[in-house]
Image (cartoon, rainbow, N blue to C red):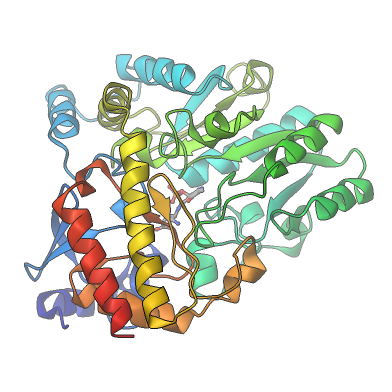
Length: 427
Ligand code: KE4
């Protein structure tokens, strides 16, 4: 279905913005067609520039766990705005945010705010290298930790979607310090440490992967990674930019009862405004300037508007405890897709945990990058377009996670299940 107003906006955008987008994954290049432009959002709904209403399962890539434009978050931003937008000095909101994060995520003894998930992971890696005086890092194929040089190697999300998991522009001298391993592979982890004794500063991973589609760890895998990193005095970094406060109030580490050394956060703690954070053991965090020799900074870090929005969102999570209901909604969507694919005879995997899910058209259980790539991305593209024509917006890539919010309850989830089931019937 065409989006005429969006199409003319996109034509203008492409003249001035590379690919017409300010982030590649928005470009629809792997699913075909042109992206629609959104002029408003509320609850579970996006309103396009063409006045179409879409049920949104991207939730601005994770932040909108309470749905879009939630009145409590909106009011918090408006109240903060009365006093200005940015001071460049410490402000009371930063203290309250730090106290909430430390309370929600007990492994975090100290935390530093920044402005994106990329900054959070980039800074956490620099900190781990400064703390251990080691240079090598381990990441996992398909995990995406933002676009800093050390991490754009076999990366997921848009890098994978657009066929550049190893970005151009990253010097070989940087890349050689990054060891990339298959996720869920204990032997590969053992071999990497055996081959690099005393050289590995940190292991960074998405404890539940959300950037190669949604992939959960094998039972015991995260505990094994924790055991091996502790044995080698290697810093374990959980990148919970996506899963933090979404999978549970305390993130995956609460659900799996694992204590990482550092945690990276973002998305939900900004309530939709630019944000990132990293925190963890005080002995590591105290290596940061102005206390220690590891430098990290940011003009807008701890911005009062972003903090006010994030504080309101975190308080809502504590007040509402939406997690059981979000899991019920996720199961409802999963079961609808499984039933429709079974009736149609289409092999599908629908991994889901709480409000995160993805849809892989394959008969092979997806447990890592390689098995994710075996899924039928072309069929996903046809499914994506059929869902969109029906008024449901899924992530425009076979290698992204989908997100639900508390606003998806009731009519939105029922309608979405109907549309997805019908889209599958038409494949
Ligand atoms: P940002 O720099 O985009 O705020 O965060 C980077 C990041 C770090 N870690 C994880 C686990 C992430 O999922 C992300 C960003 N997620 C993607 C969605 N797959 C952002 C969407 C985009 O790039 O436009």
